[in-house]
Amino acid sequence: MNRSTLHLIVLLVLVVGGGWIVGASNLPGAWYGSLHKPPFTPPNWLFPIAWTVLYILIAIAGWRTYERVGSGLVMQVWWAQLVLNFAWSPIFFTKHWMWVAFAVIVAISALIIVFIVMSWRKDRITALLFVPYAFWVTFASVLNLSINVLN
Image 1 (cartoon, rainbow, N blue to C red):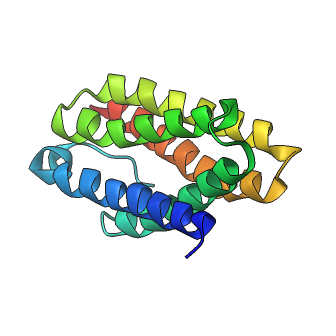
Image 2 (cartoon, rainbow, N blue to C red; image 1 turned 120 degrees about the horizontal axis):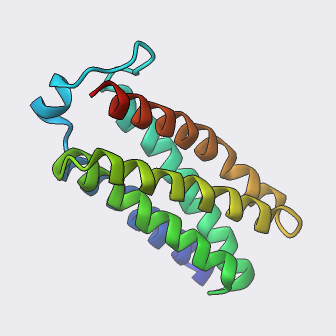
């Protein structure tokens, strides 16, 4: 196995596995079930499916970026969005800090956009891998804000 393939496997395990661990450790539970939610709230079963697909795309984008620039600024943006992504669930579902979670998700959105812009000219495929993530996090931001306002 070459180093590039090993890097991809490591990032897939880290991102997908980390996402699953964070999700399983911070389940919505009864508290979330008791909240007023907007009518466009997806069913709970959809979130792990959507996030698994997104985490795969995030890992591949991180791998392509690392292979291209190592630990350059664009890779630092990639890491920053991942750290905030993993922080959101404990903040919202475990701590119940809904407005802090909203601030975090807005920061994630900004980092996603920065990553796409930084990647666009050098590696358009990598930038495009983040587009579904950008759409989902934008939707999740609106959902987060709506739940905050309703409760």
